[in-house]
Image 1 (cartoon, rainbow, N blue to C red):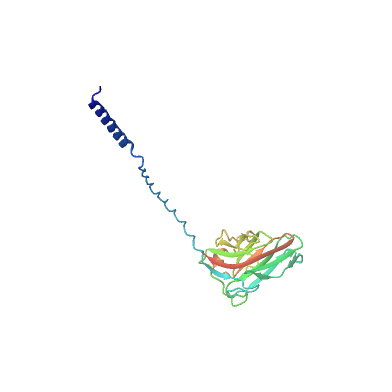
Image 2 (cartoon, rainbow, N blue to C red):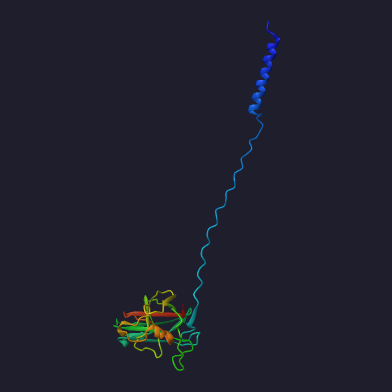
Amino acid sequence: MKHPIHKATQAGLLALFAAVALTACGSGDDETTPTATPPVSAPPAGTPPAPAPAPATSTPFATPMNSTDTSEVGKVETYAFAEKSNEQTLGAVSFAAGAVTFATSLTGAQAFAGAALRLYAPNNTGTAPITPFNASSFGKLRIELKSSTDATLTIKLQPNPVAADGCTATAQALVNSTQSEVVIDLDSTSFPLPEYCNGAGSAVAAVKAGVFSVDVINSAVSAGAHDLSVGRVSFSN
């Protein structure tokens, strides 16, 4: 016969073990508290791009308003020359989209030739009274050009009186069939005297003080049509 105290003690121990196990395992109904995700910091804002430079301001010299006149009360003229003038045919002068266009045609190759537009300084018509434009304070010539036939145009700064032999400050501009502004430094590197002048003529430093006209010449010498277009002409720094 077993002693009753042993049975009671055994039952008590079983109850104690069950309580401990239940406490350790939990009731099974508790929910796990989610861990908060720390906020992601926004990336620092990028450095804003530098502002675009302000457009260069310029002083108008000649702005064609038709085929013969400029908005600055100046005149537009044409001239042409060729080794064999009888092989050169002059075309009509036209005006469109703010530019004057002039063309010639050569029936044969020439040793020299040219079709030119001359744009006079403000308030000048090519005859007296003459008031040349003082460009001494400017460092650049800005001129809108194009040619549908040739890739190079010649630009001459003419003094008063005009250098009939072409011995004056002369630059070259690369162009195409789209009218665009060409900017040229007003120095002896960009505007030298032509080689055939042998150093004699109106150098750019001198002619800047009194620009009577800006001449643009298509000097192509091959047989065929040759044209040029000139839009706004101005000076700037």
